[in-house]
Structure formats: structure tokens, C-alpha cells
Image 1 (tube, one colour):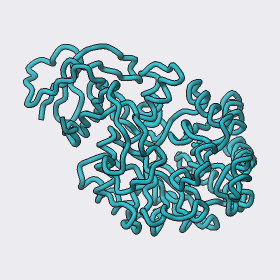
Image 2 (spheres, rainbow, N blue to C red; image 1 turned 180 degrees about the vertical axis):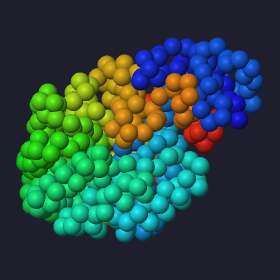
Image 3 (spheres, rainbow, N blue to C red; image 1 turned 60 degrees about the horizontal axis):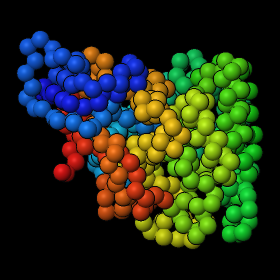
Length: 426
């Protein structure tokens, strides 16, 4: 299939392209931009007048809920939600049921995901067996089965010696370790940020130093081992400052923030809205502003959806008893555009946080539109505002704190491997 996308604004952050020109796709790859390649005859032409033509989004955290948690979501529902949101590549955390700690499970997930011909799925292997934090998983065999990195998802490793050995082992394999910094004892049973709001609402709290104490230990081990570590879902101003200093020191660390945390704070908990029960918790306004600033200055490398579909029954509970998490695959682009407009960030710089930069962290060939690159493309209307509704979400999980919000950016077409996998209704 040969496709010409004409009259659009081509924005390719990695290759410093931001101009009006046509894009040409052939044999699943980018064939060129601007003038048509010699002998090119399109089988289909897409008119992108008034639209942005960008690389497909790369999401660093999207739970697909298979295997084992299909009552919350399925590969079919979530991979279609991904392309509906312009996401063409995503990393899948290992906290499935059972966890992704065996090569057979990883191979099965990759095979089932590939058979859908939708978004590309990159599994993260479990760092420890069953994610129990006691015994290392078979990291080498998991890497050979297709895991791009190792992670504990939200499960802790209470024994620092185990984490030390894990980093040493991962370093010998040349694979990065993804960790969410949180001290499990300080965070035990907590559901909200330790501040006035949690006190007023009577919610068990998690202090901000639960993040920074764990972060300090991780950074010390990075110094000792030289292992590449990706820090997942920073949530505090102090954490951002520590990562800024670590990068200035030259430590091999990258980090991301969840799209929800860049826009919301503990103030959004005022009505006990269980959709705002997230991990990590929504923090103070100061922390939220620090995340926005850290994302703008590059301290925070990438923005992710932290997509966590939850069944409705688990959300229709008192706040402290509800299941944490929010759907986000379809909102990653709108929330990125919203942040960019509020901070005065150029469109290309904003898109870099959800395209080429997360692709570099994953170590995959994605997130750009140079000739020969995979034709993973997102075509969207940056001026169209869409009101978020449960009925409008393709994800099986309808749990989002942004229900009722009018957010900028409507995906019109998504291409994966040169095939149109999503086309919005007129």
C-alpha cells in the first residue's frame, strides 16, 4: 500500500522538521517528504489540510491487562484505544497475572499483540520472580524472549541488597532497569499526599520523602554499578531536583512523569473522586508545578499515560478502598498539548516528549519520520477540542479524572507499519 498524506504540517522533532509538506509511505516505511519519490503512485491519498502529521506516539507505561486480568481490559480493547489516541508503540509493565517473569509468557504476549496489527507492544520483564522482590528473575532469558527492559512495576524491593544485585546483573546484560522510587514502609496503606487535604478528608497519607528516600538509594546504587536506570512516574518537586542534580553529575538516568500528575494535584481529591486515586498519589500544587517545569527544561525526559484500566465496580467504592489507576492512552496527546499551551512550549518540543525521546529510552526504532523509518504516523487536528466522556473512550476502562473536560487535539488518522489502523468518523 502506497499512501500520500498531503497538505499537512509535518512535525518531526528528532529530525528538526516543522514545515508544510507532503509525506509519502510505501512498503510499510517512510518513502520521503516534500516531493514525491521517483515513480511513486499513491494507492490512497489522505488530505491533511489544517492537520499536523507527526510520528506515532510512544508510551512508556500502558497496562494492557493480559494475561490474567481480562475482566479489566483486553488486548483488543486497549490496543485499539492506543491507535485511537495516536499511540503506535507502547511499553507494557510486567504486573500482569501471572507477572511477566517467564519467557513463555512474554512470547505469548508479543505473539498475541502482533496478531492484532495495531500498536507495537514492548514488554518489560519482571526484575524479580513473581515481582516479590526476593529472588531475581531469569533476566537473560527474558531479554532473549523480547523484553526491552526490567521493571518491578509498582511492587517494591524492600531488600536493598537484592536491588544492588539486580542492577549488577542488568549491567552485564546491557539492559536498563526501570524503577518507581517509593519507600514501601513509608507508603504502606497510604492513598493520598501527606498534606492538609488528606488530613481534612481523613485519608491515610504518603509523605513526599517516601519518594526521595527511595530515590536516594537508587541513585547511590547507580553510582556504584553504572547501570542505566529509568525512573518511573516522578511525583515530587524534591524528586525532580534530585534527578536534575544526578544528570548534572553524569549519572546514566532518565525519568518520566504521568500525564495526570502534570495537570492535577491533591486539590482534585476534595470530593473523594475515586478517579483521582492514583499511584503515586496526586501531590501538592507546588509538586505539580515542578513536574511541569521539569518536563519543560528536560529534567523529566518523557510524559507517559500510565494507562491503568480498572473495572467499574472497583472504582465505585469509597476513595481509600477503590482500586488505584486511570485510563490514559487516548488522553496522552491531548494532555501533552494542554501542558504545552499552558507553558508556552513549541509544538515540536512538546511532541518530542511523547515520540522520539521515549523511543530512545526504550531503545527502539520509532518516534521519527525520516526516510526508511517505520511508517508509524499520527495525523491530528490540534485545534479541535474533544469533551472526554466514558462513551467516547475506546478503552474498556472508563476510569479517568478528566471526564467532562474539553481537551485539545483530535486524532484523525493513525498509521502503523504503513497501514491505516484508525480513522476518525467525520
